[in-house]
Image (cartoon, rainbow, N blue to C red):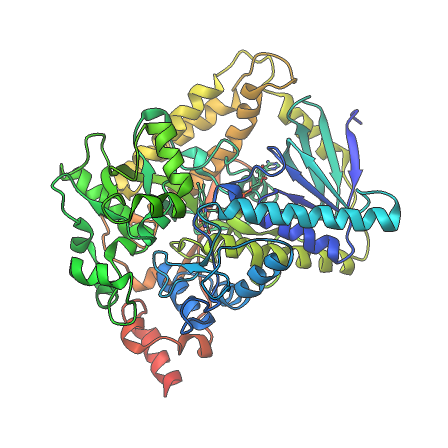
Length: 629
Ligand code: FAD
């Protein structure tokens, strides 16, 4: 109907971060014609910004490490709400995925005896993060892109066309998924530069669009992360889980205001950095929660000894899981013991020699020098919590990444389940590789099994087109103002610490914002028009915000990335339940409770009774006693 360019593929991967690239490589290796679509430049995804490393129990630095220890740490970090099958696959397969990267040309930092080095990170019992200085994500993306190019060269030799089996569509935003009956039939989007529309005719779509941080004012996320994949999935009829769980990274920059929220990697603490309040006190010792009491040092002396002797000492409390550290910082600032600019102090200058800091944390040294005029080898940084990562996302089948809608798959940050209520640092990069590969394979197998290719319905293309152009030339609400109000609302009312009245108030504001988004207007034409792009993205941010707020209101307990002031404890009954978000009318979010399947016997018996009793219901404990006999 419209003069829209049209492309036919077997698999369309939306997103070119680690998850998207790994999925595309897999689909292409299974012989599928694959498109990679990304909103920003090829190579610029969140994955590039990942600093600390990829968690994989290779046991290179401490041979006591193995998949079972990693599995246990992941479940503990997520406060046992994780999809245990995903946590199992992740822990088992991460080492292979890291070795595979090395085979494809990644150059990880080495141990003295030449193995891939591994660093300490919060919540990981042993040094586990394979890394390249503090620029691990860059190396990961570089390697995956190089692999894509290698496959394209192979295709050129065999078919005379570099893009015969794998093609990248960069600076191209997808706005709608299309369906034939209940199955995926393709995707619709626009080129950011020209504003021209594009149609993908494809039976399988893999969502790998990353996070939602741009719904919050203070965030480590960049402009692309407007929850597009989450919203595309909802609108196509799929379900989102765990949306109430958002990770506020404890250490974002707080000063100057223009850089507020930018990440300060956890490696600073992993490599010896400590947190202090305005009184100079290492306050984290006051915030070790009951469930972790036996795993963390209670004195500075023991904590400091741990860096050189992990067998005989417990870890410093600065390396508690992120939710604990973020809440502690929040509490110190609230109690009036914050730094001048409203954070706390993170100091590595008195802990490591200047040369060592520059060698281990080159990006951090550069970032503070350039952005804040602070020399981290000589003075402490000021840091505070920043919206960093969403644990929630598309509900998928653990083994294949398949969503509830046939033909739809999801991997990486846009998917939910793997990290439960809180993700451990370093578990995302490994997640992208493990589940990116699985989703690519899942999509390829799905395409093979299809009796007939689903067809594009022209009316759906017309609707998608009409929806996209609607804001243009409309003399309506200003998208920037609407966006800012949404960000403030989510930040202030559905942030780190939540209470029923505030979240309810947020939901009322979101309702009003929804009305404003319906009449949002963008001046100018379709040619490179950021105001128009934002007007389109707002639909997604509002849908996602409603999921977060509604689920946050329903979950009457505190767990991981969800802290309720009015329900401060963890409640074992809630641990068994997932809150599942969906929409029927494309605008109102419905949230339903769903009981999680119990953990497989051979996995649950990896934990000891004492630990499980902190998380499980009495009924579940009775079952456990039956199994453990
Ligand atoms: P991303 O890498 O976020 O990529 C998303 C892709 O989707 C992009 O290509 C984007 O352009 C595209 N896209 C989005 N919407 C659309 C659309 N509508 N149409 C077309 N394309 C679209 N994790 C770790 O494990 N270790 C770390 O050390 C670490 N450090 C981090 C540091 C920072 C500053 C940040 C922000 C995150 C960090 N994380 C870390 C988290 C981790 O980097 C991310 O969770 C992960 O990279 C997400 O990868 P992804 O492949 O799911 O998506």
